[in-house]
Image (tube, rainbow, N blue to C red; front, side, top):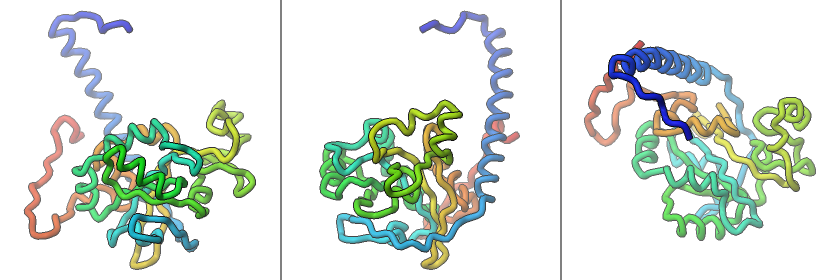
Length: 248
């Protein structure tokens, strides 16, 4: 791997300022994309899904845990696998108590869903030491409806909003290779008004690599970062001041 060239401090500063302008532009583009995402129409979820949880059967509404929003991570773990997907597991390793708490403070729950039976999920989670809510959709149509389990015998195959023919033309048919059912990963976001649930957003494939801290997750949601949020339980909130480097 080639190393960067060596420059004087003055030369480095010129190059760094040029890069800063590109970073600012990327930040503005990201803000604009997040605004467009919040303006997407939403779709009412009328189908009743049943999931297996550690304390019994759970509905999609139960997964909100009485919060306003729900982010589902479609974790690749098929019923006949002995353990979960390695890439999904690497992402799960980075889910901290602090991240979950920050999302919860914004009335948002992050939960994992896989098709593996709950006994396999719980065994794997205990082995990994993870704490996030994790549900089994085994026997449910949830994975098929949200296009992360691909099986043409059950539902038309579509991944990342492309049909097999569209993937072939785009050079991304590798997503659909192998024996069906094929497990894929992604995130789906839901909003509830009372007991009525709406699907607001889903993202798949490499787009999920853009996720990081709680703001990145909140940017996927219809309510966004909720900057005016007041912390519950009487705890004071320090005012958030934008960094001058990224304020414009």
